Image (cartoon, rainbow, N blue to C red; front, side, top):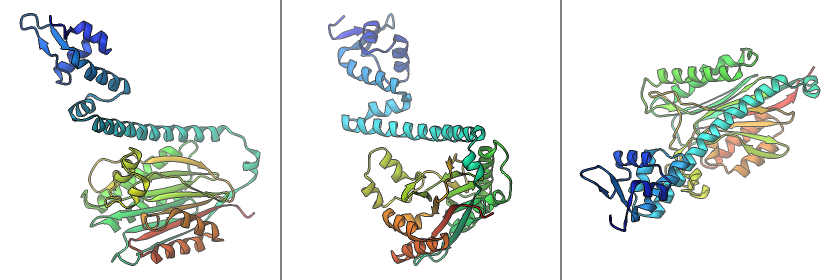
Length: 361
């Protein structure tokens, strides 16, 4: 045997892949041996293949599927391979974050069910709210929909030839939540069922075409908490103790590129495809899984739900300023919509503002 060749056993020990794995990768054309004995079928590997094999071993330890490893093996330079790994890990982190949010939702919900809080029990909270949707200064029609009630807050931003019916259908499908009592321990199932109903309604309104659909960001008041359901690039913010927190994550291609380190936030803001959605309620296709979160409400909290007609043209620090300065929700909504139109009003703009207040006896 040549000095630059290793038996499959020696090669396996050197690269930390088992002979069984090496045989599988040979069959899948992922890591071919340098030579196969024509009589015995025994595999031999070149010493020069060790670096490739070690990379495969580490990528498998990372949990990367074989299809992803094949893509990395096909690239020509280390920088491209690094970008592929970074993109893969960003997707893993996004999926993990979604599961983490669901776990947090369940933990918070179950903990609240068992927790005795005499202060919160002695204080009855309710919402003061206002909603408004405006066509803006450029678009010929309004494809947004906004709603606010004693229990339900919602914003939907339609797109495509049936965008207006799609957004209206999504919000209308949730309207029953405004009057239906939330069953004990059932807020998660109630929200999930409501979103599935909204997806079916959007499909009907859009006529079964993937070219039309809507975003959906909604919050359900349960008496002391707000349950958030979110899909798309409409947004929800929380103003608490003078600080503004964004509590949703955009489901857009550009946001995924920021998450993967391929774009900076500044580059994303000017990207020509910044409105391209990765997830939405559409007229044709599988029902996507929305983000679900649970927020403990405190007296003095102010929530903002808005379409990207506001967030894409009014800087967040200006949104913060206007939201904090308005004494009541209707004044806040008016100020925010006016700011979007003053910035050119290139899109429909919808805002829902809700304050958490102590109920008047």
